[in-house]
Length: 171
Image (cartoon, rainbow, N blue to C red; front, side):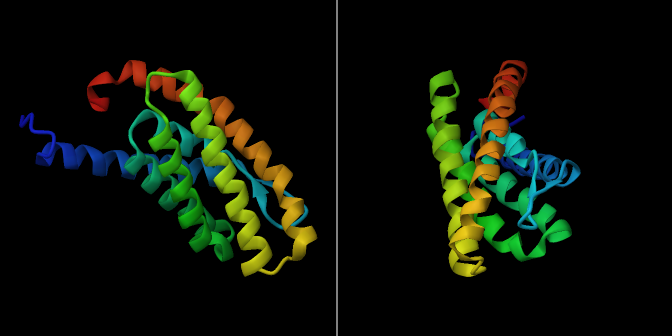
């Protein structure tokens, strides 16, 4: 096996990780859907986004978060598919960049910063793009915050466990 970090095996591993984590993200987003009054839904997709970003790298977190979440939206709430691709992709990217894989405090900081981007991103889309009005966009914020908190509360320990179990993939 080629040990060159830029070799084809590394690219294949990265593509495989993105595909698997995007599928996990789509399933976590789509399987547990708790509707909210505005027509959206609470889901566990952030668990998968944070787990991917904090376990592997920013690219895997970004692509898995954006693509997986957008696929779930295409099935369940298509008006959000494109904004979700961008918002969740950026969320995974930020979480992966901020995490250093060795510090629980950095993982928590990653969740706070990336989660804040997600909350603000959806507010912007709901207010300016979908024109739900200030009240409608503000009404979504508490649910999005809960989603980030739950995503971080499960995703951070999950990433820690997986990092300890799969050290050879993380190198």
